[in-house]
Structure formats: structure tokens, C-alpha cells
Image (tube, rainbow, N blue to C red):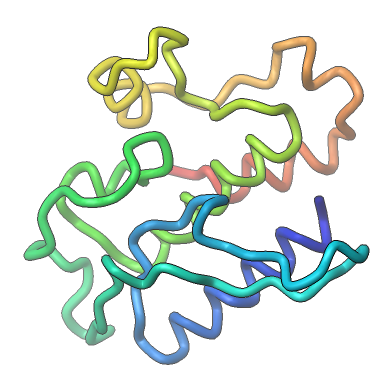
Length: 146
């Protein structure tokens, strides 16, 4: 999990260095090139990506696009910035470590989980987190700062 997330975050750092907002960071948009440990990871599907000017952030002209469970609070509020991609990577890390996304209402509907993204903090109390180190939990928390 650590090497995969390191590669995802490195890829996002490269995008942001090039002034690109991915805007749809989720597991399905990253591909492992081999099945080996520490396989190279590539970002794919830049269909929602946009260039940005650091002096004109957050972007308020992009509309509400992306994958709901992975959208950052600021993205839901119409204010997308590089931190939005990092927050979405935090949702990926959360899912990678426990098997589900942090703000799921378990009914597979959009509105309750979107409201939770805006108003709630991620929980680490489910039994799926029992075997996960406190260091890994802190890492995920650091990515999911609102």
C-alpha cells in the first residue's frame, strides 16, 4: 500500500508541477504496469484534467464533475485546487487500507455521502482498521484534512 500511494502522490506532484489538476483521482484512474511489488504506477484518464494558474486558485469555473465518493470538499463547493487531488488520494489510501471509502452511507446513494464529505471527519473505528498501524492511519488523516 505504501509504495502504491507513494507512486500516486509522486504522479500528482508531477501533474501539479506542470500546473495540471487531474480532478478525478480514484483507483480506476491509476494503473500498475506489472504485477510485481513496487510496480510502476501510471495515471490514466485525464478527461477532467485542466491546466491552472497558481495565481488564480481556487478554480471556481469548473463545475461539479468527478467521481462522487472521491471528490474533495472544496471540489464539491466549486473551488478546485491541487489540494483537491491530494484529498482524493487520501480517499484512495483509506479504501486501499480497509476496503471501503470513508464517507459511504452503505445505501449506494449520492447525496448522503456528499453531505458527509462536506461535514464529517473520516472514521477509523470499523474492525477493518484493527490491523492497520497508527502511522498508516495518521498518513490517511493527513491527506484527508478539510
